[in-house]
Length: 250
Image (spheres, rainbow, N blue to C red):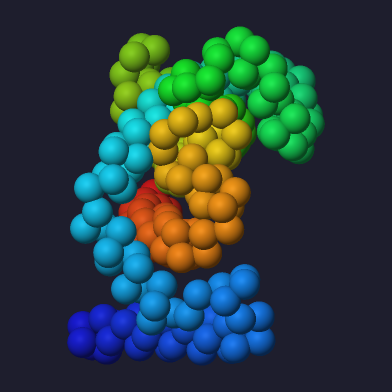
């Protein structure tokens, strides 16, 4: 049973990789070198890029920006979301406003961010945090709303104070849905940071992509994109595994 449970996801992953590779090769045969590089060549270029000394300073720059943006999004999102979830009236008033803000294309805000923060690390951190914070707020707010009433009744019977109520009842009960918000927030913060680097930075993975696009360097574009996709996929899969376990035992 254990072998089958491990073998099935592995086979699914192999089939998915094979299908994507064949589709990629087919697109390359159709579009040619102007638009794509072939799969095997792109993998080779990506490995060469990983061994290049010029690549890692850009990785460190982007990693630092994503970490800072995600920290701001998580701390701000949890603080605001949990507060709005506890105070139901405030949450009902704020939710449509948050949804409206979330629907605004964030790229329209980038000129304002550049004027406030200038070109460099602060601007892309802010842009990443703006992308990630609203989903975390919404998920955290709904997590507090959806806590089963029996937990709150039990806490009142046990006469728990505010701090024990928060740490022993509210946070454990809300954690599965809160973590889902964190998973979504990570993905959007990464996207926002890369966009910030593309339009207002002189270092980072997004800057590398923008410079390669300007010179129509398809080898760099494809190899960097492949590495980004692999990184985002690995992190997302790891977070999804934790997310499912929390929902299973939550």
